Image 1: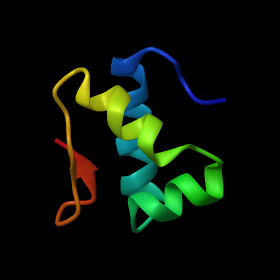
Image 2: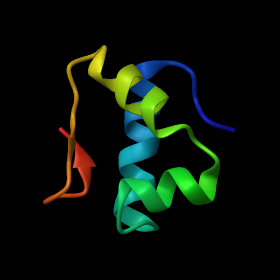
Image 3: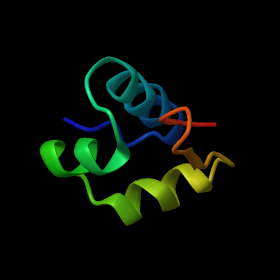
Length: 57
């Protein structure tokens, strides 16, 4: 289950990216997350995905 609260979602996504996935695309594809929704939700709390570090910063 994907958290709905943006701050909990941020923590969850960054942990998943750090521990299990080498890219945002892999995470979204394998976990069934809509990439645009994820990016928009986290942009709402001023976080953007950084490919270099593979995390939302």
